[in-house]
Image (cartoon, rainbow, N blue to C red; front, top):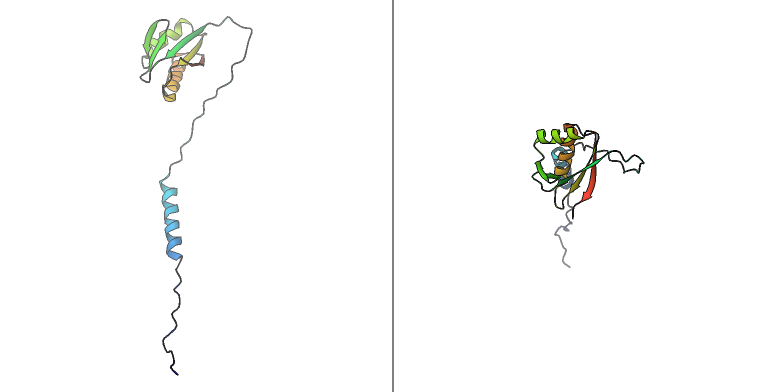
Amino acid sequence: MQLDLQPVRRRQAISLTPLIDVVFILLLFFMLSSSFMQWRQIDLSAAQASNNTSSEVHRLRLISDQGLIEHGGQRYQMQDAVALHALVLDAPEAVFAIEVAPGVMTQTMITLLDNLKQAGAQHVSLAGVLP
């Protein structure tokens, strides 16, 4: 009778410690490398029907991302603060409705809204999308 004197091979267990270390390092990396920015909010209210039709509406057409605006057959540049200020001074109580051409970025539209407010316009509105 022969005796088997070789030790029994045990199955080696896989250590989870390095895996947990890697997960924590990745967690720290993504936490430290991500940035949290505060989003600014624009208050928009729905249009309400009113009996007051005395205020005139000036339609400004935002044609391109470069800030090309059309109003009354004339073209203006959005960056031209003097022209926008003169346009607003003609009728400061008027409603300036902005029509946006398809494909124009939202940031361009928001910049135009800000420029009109800085020029002194009190009532600025979005009219819709140009055909």
